[in-house]
Amino acid sequence: MFRLQSSKVLAVDMTGDAVKAKNGSMVAYDGEMAFKKLSGGGEGIRGMVTRRLTGEQMTLMEVKGRGTCWFADRASEINLVGLQGDKLYVESSNLLATDGGLRTGTEFTGLRGASQGNGLFTTSVEGHGQAAIMSDGPAVVLRVSPQYPLTVDPGAYVAHQGNLRQSFQSGVTFRTLLGEGGGEAFQMRFEGDGLVYVQPSERNTIAGDV
Image (cartoon, rainbow, N blue to C red; front, side, top):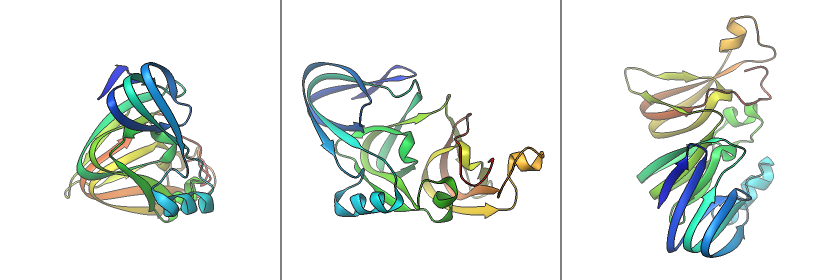
């Protein structure tokens, strides 16, 4: 159903089923399609309320029909993630599209979200199917194992999945270590067994030059 037309364009072939995608991300389609705006970016009232409280802007649309739709957003690189009943955590700005059958919601992430200016919640995607996530430059997928925990710059973080414990540490970042940062510094630490997706270009954060 999901395939990459290029590294920056997602093609979705539909035969009467539906797909959820970032509002405004469709660039072309053929066949017969119907469109519906979805409120809140999450399932039900809880998703709407948490998005409103945190000020996050995540508007999804549902596309249903027969034919092919093409999606892209600001020439971002697109990465396909297959879910087999597990859960993917992704920054809302990095989520492009999901299979219609996957459940999207909001998850509490604690201090990490507050320091990034993305609120206290991040987006979760759960079920069986495919999701398309975006990155500024080609994403790198890093394995975390019990023997090898991973520390990530918050500005480079895109998503993670698997049996991972996430914590947030203050004190130093990669840039402040080199004398190039300013303001309060943070790092993200992942322990357990799973995958972390990072991008080679960092987003701006409230927590200083991280």
